[in-house]
Amino acid sequence: MSIINNINKVFDHRIRLGIMSILMVNEYADFNMLKELLDVTDGNLASHTKALEAADYIKVEKQFIGRKPNTRYSCTKLGELEFKKHIDALEKIINKH
Amino acid sequence: MESKDYLKDLSEIKDLMNKSSRFISLSGLSGILAGTYALIGAAIAYWLVTEFSYGTLTLDDYIFRLCVLILFLVAFLSAITGIYLTTKKAKKNGTKIWDATSKRLIINFLIPLIVGGLYILIILDQQKYGQSGALMLIFYGLALVNASKYSIGDIRYLGYIQIVLGLICAMLPVYGFWLWVIGFGIMHIIYGTLMHFKYDTK
Image (cartoon, rainbow over all chains, first blue to last red; front, side, top):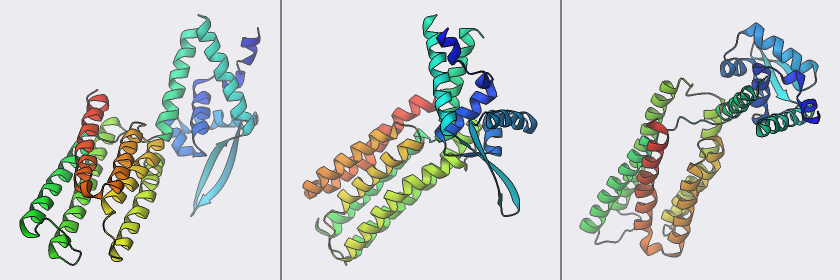
């Protein structure tokens, strides 16, 4: 049971895992960078970043570069911790089979 | 979810981590060509020095100036070839040539390299040119080690080799020329060939 408990429902989606993976190894990433790397539509990406933000796993900063609005994402300490737990749980499940 | 899906998740995570933080489109072929330029440049310099300068070099000599010119030419041609072939490879891979990963790679590569280059120019100006071969190898090696965090990890080993050659060169300045030939010429060709077969031919 304990392994199953560590599987985080918030991460139970390809795109959310993707967002977290990118933010784990980069200090921050902006909307377009995530979009290109994950190959998703604006709406799709926005809904997933919102879910991660609601869980307090990522931090969103809105700023202006010149006149263009730019949204920047970074991973929170909590997000980092939960992501690591999730990956450990995945590895354990795989090793069991 | 089946465990098979989890396995796919993990490999996708790894892939995204690499893709978003490392610039991996460096071309192996450009290493081979850079090494070839270095060998040709070294051969011309060797010929000039033995033929016209009795095997020795003094700073105000025009032969010395020619050698410096050859050096810059080799560096320039290597950079141009590297940029051209890497752009081509990035296009083929469908990645952008100028994004966050390549910017980070260039910046981290250039910091030790420019510092080293300026330092060599400064001490040359003070008539201390005995160590320039060693310094070139050492700073170039440090630049490679520094850049390896943001690219194919293998370039770290090329960096270590250059640093070791540079230190040997500092102890044995008499062999400076040959160590330079090994470091910038032969090592580039060996490394480029290995990378070409490891990454490019896939």
